[in-house]
Structure formats: structure tokens, C-alpha cells
Length: 264
Image (cartoon, rainbow, N blue to C red; front, side, top):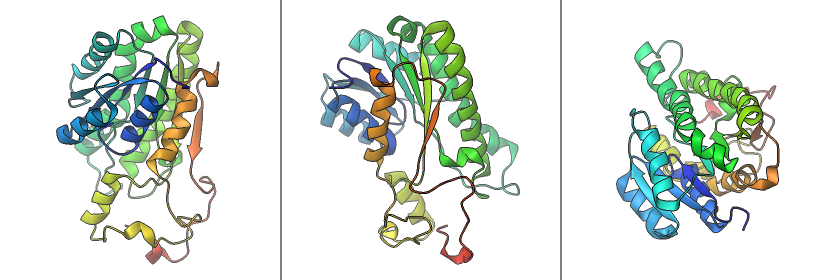
């Protein structure tokens, strides 16, 4: 039980990576605040995990009161707050030509500013527990795909914030801040996006080797397994760090010469 009695907020946990992290936290002895926009999915997660171990808040992460609501719910229900997982995000396809300021601001608001707001709201309780923050970024933080421009910038900004606060908050408050940058992960929302692009639901079963050397992409549970290390006391004094979880080197990797093999 690597997270025994720890209380953890996991944003965007009604589905995908967030749901997998919440499940793993409870399996490791923790208690979680489930959050998202999908009420039925969130209720199903709480039912699965048990009401003694999980509680649900359905709210827009960008609303001014949501960070405080999440913190207050964790403390009122479970008595304390040990960790925050900033997982909620929007993946918006856009490039320099299709990105206007309205879209750019929306992506930054959700992916970068909302995590900052939640960290600030959680600080008094994380300080008491010498707790931690785990930000969920993306391999796109390093440069990103041409058609993920706004998203990539938002995740790059999140990574810089992780390193900045990982130093500042650990020195001043004893609060660790770290980040996981997942690669291509098979989530429910990824399947929905591919369906919207006209692909069959089993699109992930036949991918070019250049994108899936293992013959498949990453499962959410594999990201969750790594998250436990950063949320547990096992990571000791490590702070301000990021780890990239992908099945090939991200930086400097040669793209395929035949661009027709690239999943859209």
C-alpha cells in the first residue's frame, strides 16, 4: 500500500489517464476526489472505487470557484489533502493558420492556468502534509506536432511551471512538484477523436511501426503505475523534474518519409 491514507485530488478523472490514476491510487490505499465534466462516467468511477474511498465533483476546471471547491471537498470528506494530480486538459487540433487568440486562450486556460490555480488553492493543506503535486503533461511539450500548436505550447508552459514551482515550493514549503509527459495513450477520448476523423474504432490495432514499435500504444494503466512513484514517499526529495513516458526517443527522432502513414 504505497499511498496508504493519502488524500489525492485527480482532475479530469472521469475518464482516461485520470481515471486510471484514481483507480491505482485507491488500490494503493489512497482516497481520491474524482473530477470532470462527464457526470455519468464520474458516478460510475465512484461506484467502482467505493464511496469510502472516492467522492465526485462535476465542475468546469476553469470556473473561478472550482479549485477551492475541489480542495474543500477533499478536506471536508477525508480530513486533509496530501496531493494534487493536474490531469484535466483539452487536446485541440490547430496550427499557426487555424489558431486564433480565442482558441489559444482557451487551451492555455485549461491546460496551464487551471493547474496553477489549483496548486495555489491547495497550498495551505499541502504545506501541512509536506505533500506533492503531479502535473500530467505531454511529449508535445518539447516542440509538438504541427497540428497541435496551441496544445503543445500549453504543455510546454506547464513543464516550465513544474520546474519553477518544483524548486520554489520545495525550498520554501517542502512541497514537491513533478511532471509526467505521456506519449500516445489509448483513452476513451482518443478513440472518440479518431472516430470523428473517420477512423474505425479498432484503428489502434494496425499502426505504423514508427509510431508503435511495440505493436501498440500505451495503456492509461501504464501511466498510472508511474504516477504512484511520484505521489508516494518513495520519490523522497525529488522535485522539479519531468519524465517522458513514450516507447521511443522523442527528441531528435526522424519522422517517417511517407507522410501518408501518419494517423490524422
